[in-house]
Image 1 (cartoon, rainbow, N blue to C red):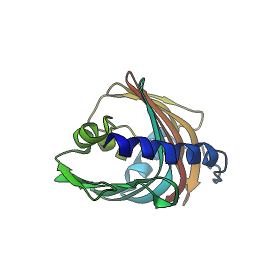
Image 2 (cartoon, rainbow, N blue to C red; image 1 turned 180 degrees about the vertical axis):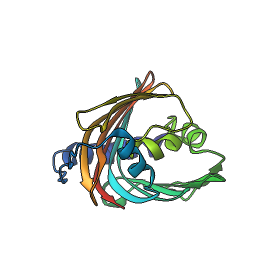
Image 3 (tube, rainbow, N blue to C red; image 1 turned 60 degrees about the vertical axis):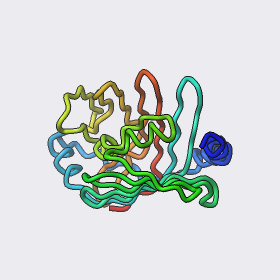
Image 4 (cartoon, one colour; image 1 turned 120 degrees about the vertical axis):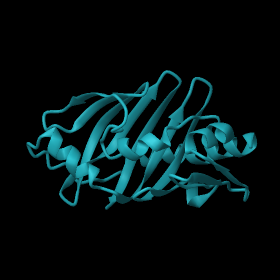
Length: 199
């Protein structure tokens, strides 16, 4: 497993650095809408397909990959892969559990994605919360501190020991959604760039 992770880092990190400068997105509409209106619109997004790049860093190592996330209500598939689809990981789940499929054919299951990824990769990525955070929403069942920009987009969210900074938005089907997000907690930082949203 350790060899696989090192290969995954080496084959994807250079691609991440190159791709960060080449993303083209539509600017946000920046209409003077209330946060309550924006939150209601974003909450109604229950199906999406997004593509982009993700990079994680801890005090001991760093890792990055291309990623694709397909969501339909409570069902999701997250694919992480290096150049030309190499060294792929596939995470499939719903409220009943999660399946992780490794590049070597190994299949692993768990009740939740956080414990499974922590056990196999050594990182506790908050996948269950990302379902909300990636849309620019707080997790509704948890306390949150929120800061907004001049157009009432969520700019900074502090929730469950994470600080989420929304660095850029883009307009898709008349809705402003995040396409550059930076997440930090005491043990990890995560950079997410979304190059394509499909709703």
